[in-house]
Image (cartoon, rainbow, N blue to C red; front, side, top):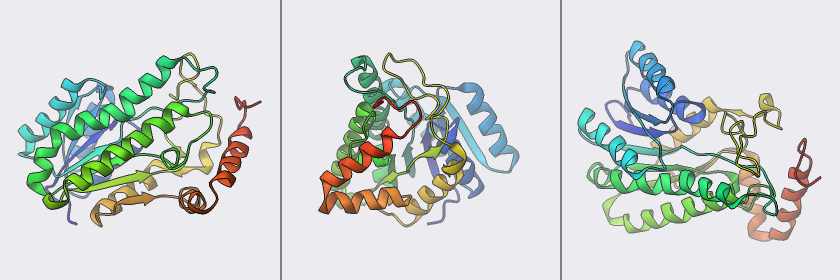
Length: 270
């Protein structure tokens, strides 16, 4: 797929995977429409893409607000005449046992990770049907199998998957491509902003960021998946192995996940 002059909407574009996606699509000649809450980050991103010869606009977007999502799509249509790719990347994580977590934390994760995807897809879908375009949900290994200490995160990613798979089936005759991308642990600030049991930000990540996949590599694999119109992109060994083990020995996968997460520094299981 040639992305030159294709219009790509990206949520959560001011940092991490979203920012890496925006820069790479800009380099490939796409019309980038960036959405996020951080206007300073968006302004800097768009200026960088423009300085490199690309085309980009932004709209300050809180994906939990339906009107903001509608306005982001409107910005794309008003600026470039349509939508070819929607990437629902905005997301937050959490780290707390369900025993301890304030239920408002789970609601917050559903509002951002699930409803943000629903709102953006709702308003972009008519344009994607016209262009026979792509909608991408940036999910997680946590959307493949329940991740202990991340109940709200896993629930929101499972919900995203179920929603997008249904959208895919409903649009079989309209040739809308739907892809679910599942990064593993990635070096991005979604890990630093993960919510704790009381809803405060985690701050310092408990994992060694230098040993994780970079946001740029994750973005490259997502773009490659869009170009090939893949259904699912599993980006690392953990994701591929989890998918296979779940099919044949799910109880073993439960124990593997528990053991793995219990080894984190300051694990809630200790």
